[in-house]
Image (cartoon, rainbow over all chains, first blue to last red; front, side, top):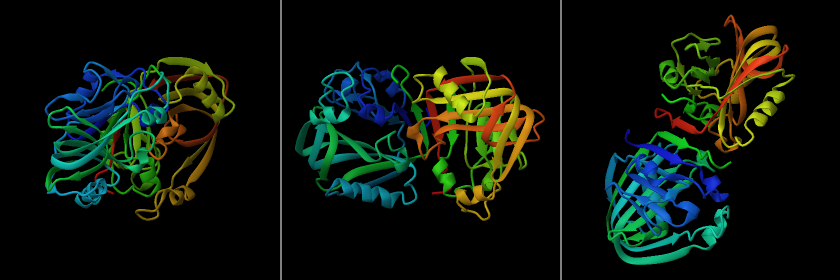
Length: 211
Length: 211
């Protein structure tokens, strides 16, 4: 599989609409690359995939299905260090590093010590076809302080509205793999390592078992 | 290359915005499949690709660049005959054949005798970065009567607004390859052959030389 191409299963508007009962096995997503985000069957938890080849379920068991995920075989073209006070600082940094990239996808990763990371974890659908706002209402949120870990993220251009998450989408996993989730806010403790790449090829696989 | 996957170069909103100076060579699009639609550098003409392996330039020379095209390696799963009074009849037919397919892409082809086919051909950008409405204003339109030929088309789901042409998008080429264009209206002369397939994998390649 070529580097820095983004592969995606299903579309986010289907997920919003509650299409989360079927999906593809995690093994399909692993074949997409080594850097990814997603969720699990019935929107039960958040998924993160790191370059060590593991998909880390933040709540549910390993051998499960995913109704929505995107991933790339990540080969960073930019490596830098940054001290960030907020999520917006990361957005600004990526814009300055890829000034002409606003119509491309970006993949990025941060490693280091974070003074705070505020995350949510979707708590699952109450019943099949429950729409996403419901699942997010039943979310759990946590704030971790002085925590070492990894942020995996994608930035998607505006024209993929309804297909992927427009703008920056970040998940966190702690170094000990015990804590993580979908990032709502973050602040670094001094400088962290930042790696990023621009992605100009997008591959979308649509569910066929569900309208 | 697998059958019935849709491959696309660039996005239609970039084309609308006048991004048509660069592009990829026709050979790239040929590698995508044997059933396709597109335009040429500077939006000079309409492109159609048929299963005999040829890309047929409706106006410009063969060895040119395309700033926007989509194609599939077409393997029809449905073959039928239909008599159509209007473009809408084709839309209705496709909906009845693929009742649960409204969130998938469809590829289709018609072969036979048409009592009338009304087409337009974009007349090219006046200057680089001219936006599409300008190029379409300078379009040529033709109505062909009692003409034998082929219609190549795609139907794209609503969520690809800005990426591909939402709804049905059809080009026509006459049997003698001398006449054709982007179809605005059509009527068949009796029954024509209709072939179609649903496409659940979408591959998008973005331009990298132009923001």
